[in-house]
Image (cartoon, rainbow, N blue to C red; front, side):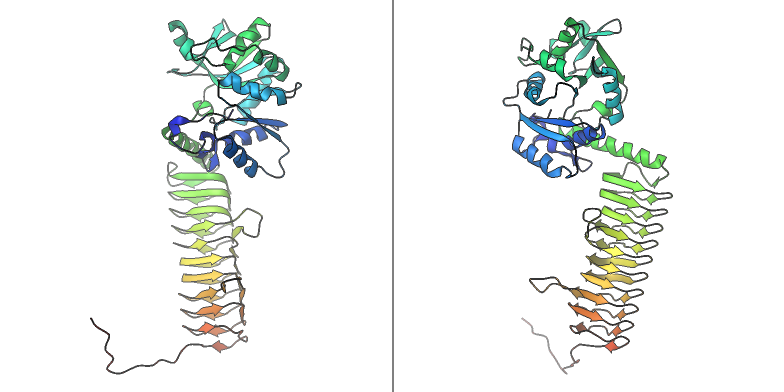
Length: 459
């Protein structure tokens, strides 16, 4: 269900498209459905329907085997009315799991247990005990048997004292769901069609109603405001941090970590404070990440050190824009690796060096204040401070090739396309626009002129 306006978010963006850990709230729910190997997903949209549908369509993997249908709930007349819109496209032979697009952190193993409790012939409810159940539908039992769900606004004083509440998540046979949806009415305080009324229909029809109770409130936590979004973001990040530490990762402070994608860590990885990981990031054995780094879509090999304040922004994993950092490489501080940067083993990239769409072979060094774009750099090259590849002519990008064992002096400009021959040296301050031969010294700079008794202009 993803039709709500989310007024308390105070945003033009539909609530289910707000981000948690770098993904839309609704995307978290759809990813969980994918983990269940669901054959069909029905997304019920309403407020901002076109924007929600476009976002989900664009983020779907081309390899996704899940059939996705969109249905509209206009106007929004309650949860039962929402599911009524989905009924025509649901397959009669399936089990329906009802999820909310603003409840992003339900675990797939929990839903598997709920589906098992349904067993294809029961109505299974996911429930939890809350010390303060205000606002939630209460689970009314007769002994251990569930007899009804009573919404808070319709509950009596005795019923409001019940602490077991309905999470908003249920599993039930599709065929039965369709029959019960047709019997809903809006004879209640809110004048809405309550999905929870199907419990009394199940009881009346002799269909067993069972509850699968959990104790983890994060799994049923919904988001209705920026405050709740921030609280759940931090709870999610702490849960992620604990999982990483249990795998052996050393975190300087688990409260200052943000994983906005997938972070895979091998043995003896160390991560300092205030680091952000986006997309898919893989860290090899013994990798050290300094404080305040932002790393997106990168593979960092064993023994590499990423010094503080480094920014790595790779493209999609597996593409030509992926960023790779080789074994025992050193990057930063204050370095920037852009899409297509590929560093071999033992490469050094120092402070205020930017690398884009370039390959640096083993042992190459660019230690400070430099730019390498659209370049192929050979082994053991030393690239001087203040030097740049001029790779763009205003219309097209061109390639610079720096062969093995070249020394580029400080403050040089290499105007692409150009090749610097192996073992060559480029004198500091040179502007090189023609290929150089191997083993040569190339100097291209204006003659120094000193004018005696020169006076600066003055006002």
